[in-house]
Image (cartoon, rainbow, N blue to C red):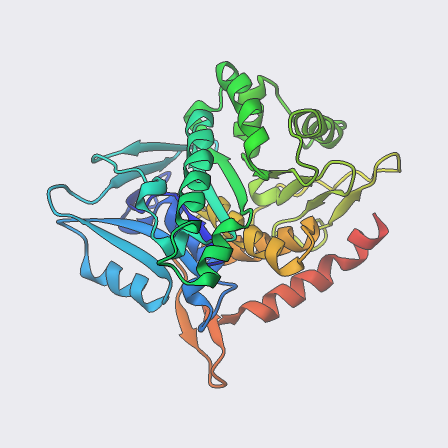
Length: 376
């Protein structure tokens, strides 16, 4: 298994500013979108290397199950006929802030929910509080250790269970507050990637960062360095700040520090900037304008992290540029419509999402930003 998310599946209501009407019964949840982001880069026959959990209530729509089944992932459906499927409301306010509210009871995913195959995963996506993050990392690690000693499993399975997976932690928005800062810094010692969005990052540290201001990017860069370098003993620890229409900002201690634009940033302002320790830093351009191709940003950040995880694996050396490229492309497919993109096969037998080739889009984006990244 290459990737497993412990995020939930949720059926969403999405409410926008008038006059746009709400969308109801939309596939959603961090688990769905993280799995989607990884699945985009794992076409059949590799699709089953993406794992996730869906708690299936008595009202679970058949057409949604058919869509999930068509992806051919290792999705474990857990029947919960005594309850309704988890549902939630996403309400976008005038300033772009998303207000989230559960409409039914939720069932969280933990290490006990995972199959043995999912326990062999190379990477895990966690979206939770700091305390729960530590508990999940410890719980998954303990279960892997126990199952590795079970000689009923094949030798290859037992070997995979002994390897160290990559843990990607996405903090929950309502607990990104200063009172949780100490716990969050403790959680960073247990994970490999820490990824809030900018609003969550600022709220957690009780600061304000204006990326359109003269020192915004330098301030973000410095703050990321302060939290990543002294709070973890892992040399490969990475901070990934997701910036919505401005792309992402990635910091790896002692190595590269870079900002990549969103796929749908205006080309004149879609520059990739690399920060080098002790070297000159170029200030990224202002790119406030969002693209008409962006229909609904819900789930874009979760999809980014699914793609980011696969990019880390494909690079073979924890390459943050490669990972961020994959994450950016995964997010671009997630936000082109309400819900999930459409999977199909081209005449040549290649998988497409929304009638576009993943490889074509990745190559085009890589070429678009290559000169700016290499110039740093």
